[in-house]
Length: 102
Image: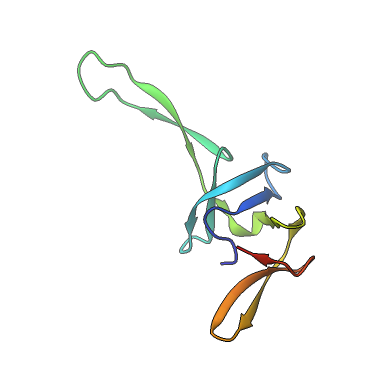
């Protein structure tokens, strides 16, 4: 996958389309990403002990990686990602400005 944990991405599809967020988890088996504050699902949690109240917790749900686009830290645009080999080192590059993505 060309998107890594910590990248800032733009949401391309769904009810959250147009929003930006930071990737907090990658799910390579599902080809998914979990983005901070995006696609939150509500879960009803039962009380653990007597006297405690149940609650509704908002948990982030994964998005398919095809529905997000990386935002280049140098040019600030949503871009496609490429790879460049320099000797033994392989790193990601922005297809717009050809800058290295760290």
